[in-house]
Length: 376
Length: 60
Image (tube, rainbow over all chains, first blue to last red; front, side, top):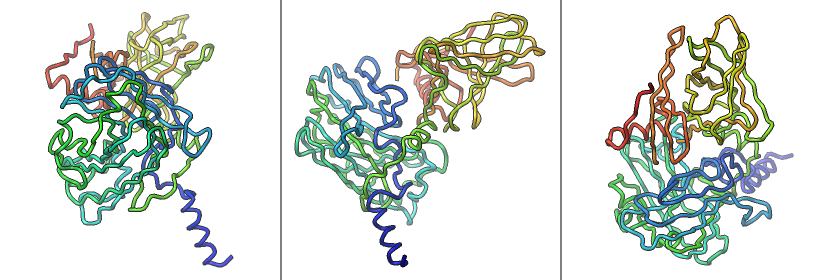
């Protein structure tokens, strides 16, 4: 094969989305949903939640009526069995007040966007592409927001022209040469935000079209021109194949294997144990102190930061060992000790005196699972 | 983020290691939050404490 043929094939593969690693976003195809495939949200309940992994939807300000559902659905512009994320409004907000805003977003880890070289003369442009479908037509805004050093923001708009029809959108954001750049760490690096609604207090600040120093809420969604998703009962907005890539050209969506995407998501959220009835897990434990034992639970991949521990039930855990000593406990009795690349260690106060000469076994009883959240 | 019933638990092991967590109800769900600057729930707890809208109790 000639070199020319090899280069032509390589270019063809790139054009077809065959090259990996270009998509800065994780789970852009909305395939991984470890928490749940449907999340209920309400102005007086959960106002910030994750649906599919890595993507959150958030109600800011003080909504008085809005509630709805954020779900992973089988509805995709290209694939008959592909996935998308869908917001459906239940009770609509009767009027959209100035302090209110509503958005869908992925927060990107700072060390994953160092190649954008923000804050200096070598800063790079990026292009956001996605498919969107909504019952509401009109002008919507997307932003990039940089929380490190000097807060910086840029909004750009896109139009949904046909209701309930998948449309592909491409937005190129210019390089940001100001603002002191993005720290090379595991904190928040860049927000990629899709606005669904914005009150008068979150527009008009001048961030629509060019990077500027964040001057407050009026910069947050500058350019967003409709609030009908939030003010219309039954309104829908859904999105898939979200890709943020270096340069000014949108290339085909990078399809990753489910296992690859899952492993990337597990850096930010993972589950140890299982919510399945009659599913058991055991692990070694030993004395921590006169009334505590500690145990290490294996994790699938190293996590971004020390995680919050939760459970889908009140907890169904326990420890046995020693001289017929045993203690059943719930999540609220556990405490974080430390995290490493292969396990998380927790301790629990028990109602017996552990003996350092004895071995103990911790267990997750049927349907006991530990949810580990290290999201940004 | 609605955070309620925050209680700080601390324990020292026989070897001197320390374990500290804040057990709280976050958006209606009970959670165990490590005292760690990189944890978003801990950061929000500290923000609300600084704002005077949340108090952390010590465990008995």
